[in-house]
Length: 394
Image 1 (cartoon, rainbow, N blue to C red):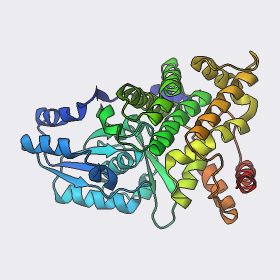
Image 2 (image 1 turned 90 degrees about the horizontal axis):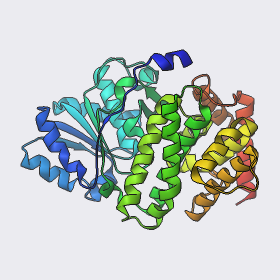
Image 3 (image 1 turned 180 degrees about the vertical axis):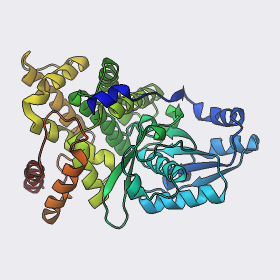
Image 4 (image 1 turned 180 degrees about the horizontal axis):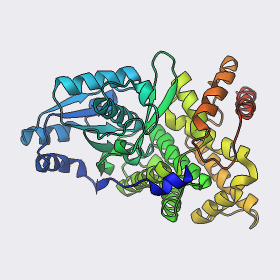
């Protein structure tokens, strides 16, 4: 797998960034001679009026479009099929996703189903099951967290079983990304918090995995972590600070590109089960699990976490790697506390622990290049400890 990672032709999407950059889209579409655009988004994005200026400009340029805003916070296979039906019915030629990771993942899966009309979502989940070009895909993030605007993954929940799994294929990476900080200004502080921690989780997991990375990905991780350290709390406190908002978008983009190659780890493997079973927002699951999993890895991640501690300029009790690693994790814990993020996932039910462990082990092994490999028994032990800790701290 490591050898394959060096052969795969990685790329980065074309970036248009800056306040108001979303309004460059109609001109881009005209140059590409594209019309009949499917805009995939969530209901709140539409209600908040974030599409108003884009719609007006599309109308001025006589570009037809259809808005599919039925995407939930954990998109399902049923929602994907609805989007596919609209794409075909309206004879669309390209897809624009506007929102957080959920609309982008749903849009990617719609594209995958268009490219592979005879395969179901379940049949496409896994690695390199699409292998055909999808319609031109443009991503416009309205949060700074998921990094989905630069990844090859689309995470979809099966509506009947609540099982959450990813479609992974190079063809799912957007061709163009719009990083417009004005689109994130209206985010509630709580959303700014959990999406920012999601981006941090991507960078930290990719950095501590390390096996698939080149120096390029490692540098992206370091830059992402530093941007988050310097700007997340500012963006949380002052939502209209466009400089902090732009830096957070850049951090999410860098972290997304880093984990596209470097991969994620057991924070995601366990977090996806919580999102699927209990409809927990993805970023919230990541925020609650990040330091718990890193501490469970133990000495295997101390050196890498210590490096991130130095990147941020965090003071530790001494110069040892363990001390620096713990100082970095304590900073994350303190940030979560200041932003009102719970320390423990108290939604876990005792009867589900075996299922959580089984699903997490299946997702994580052998794909994720984690610093410490856990078997199902170790996942069960970890989740049981989470359950016990959450009950003790109610």
